[in-house]
Image (cartoon, rainbow, N blue to C red; front, side, top):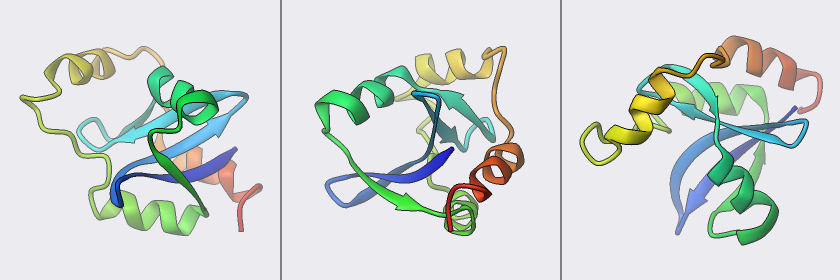
Length: 103
């Protein structure tokens, strides 16, 4: 599993994890990583965002700093979907799995 800091025009947007061609983004509002197909499509094809390789310690710091916090009103539909996600990924599990692949 690889970790990335996802940026849009220099602004920190997501802490993301790529595993087996599935892109997960950390959503601070839920406290979990969720599969994010739009981000996956961007990573492999569109590249509207920039992706910076990071390690687990940096990911943990960014999560603690609130990266991935969405406005509840502007993103109500996406947040509702992620809150009902049957398979969210716990950050401690994601960061532990990434520890074997990132410095």
